[in-house]
Image 1: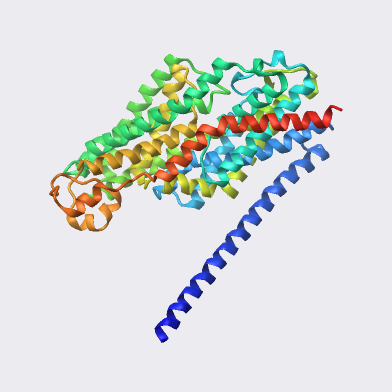
Image 2: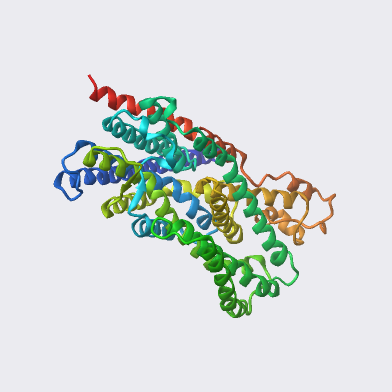
Length: 505
């Protein structure tokens, strides 16, 4: 009887703890929503007081508030691309990741966001068929709101989606509602649709390739410390070279556009300079290092953090236009009375976008960080390093070839790539030998197994059945990618009709 009472008491205590946890979570969410609302109210107040020069136009005021809302959603969702792997590999704590992401996204938006932005994302609609300036304004506001709402919904379900694709879908839907299907540049849209496949495949393939190279040249060697002294300087110098080109091509493209020859020369010079500097530094850092994977992986930790910060900077420079592009278009249309494909982006617009992205990261970015960093597949420092390196490399290759790619799809594809490579290596007994104790401990966190372990071993057979990429997250993310453009387009058309219905008798 006493045992029954104790069991019942334990169950009751667990229920109470669960309810308390749910209450705390609900309270934290309410506080975050209140702070986000205060940010939007502050924007509204600044437009009426003249701190933000809205010129008394209600359309500019409305577009500015929605732009701030979009910026927060970009921070809440897209931050997972750059920070998730670093968090999942425990290279950065949650607090450190939030600080780095917010700071470097803001700096990227403010410093390299550019003084001229595209008002119609990717040129997907022909503004010459828009019948009036008012219709254009309604279309841009509807598109911006549609993208923000869709990204918000995606964040709520934990799906990392492309904010660029969301704004493309919103513009397309609002454009069709405003002027019919003739308004859409279908060749451009077909390229964007192709990027749904190109981006994750390129990112995943390159991430798997980089990871396999590091494993083969360093982690699968008997003397990993000696191998690391030889190859870690090469891999880190390669990262320095790639990221120098990536930063010039993407992070600074709105304020400086170097030619291809300059970029090639820059990449080569940075590689050899970095290698010459890193070789003695890595040799010193590896002194007394244990011949263990976890010890060798620490040599990649600082380069990974450095890469993560640069990715965040480039993200802020690029994706701030998703929030401020349509806003700049509305401001230009109101002030000039005409429609422009390019518009000036005053410093206050870039600052608004940067602050909004930072607030979104801080308030709502944690959920997506955990999804990308931990829930898709288990990431360690070296796997996260491969993902970051693949993300920058893919964007460089795609940009050179003129292929539109999504940074979100590239980064998440990289996470899938390293996860599926782990599965392949594990199930085909490829890797460095581990003993049966590590098998009993769950394959040493998913490490690969050598054929040195007898194939008839029951633990090995069980290990072969392991799936190291969670299929439910995989399918959820793929589904979200596929429906982003059509769903955002539907919302864009709906919001356009709502605005037109309110303005036209």
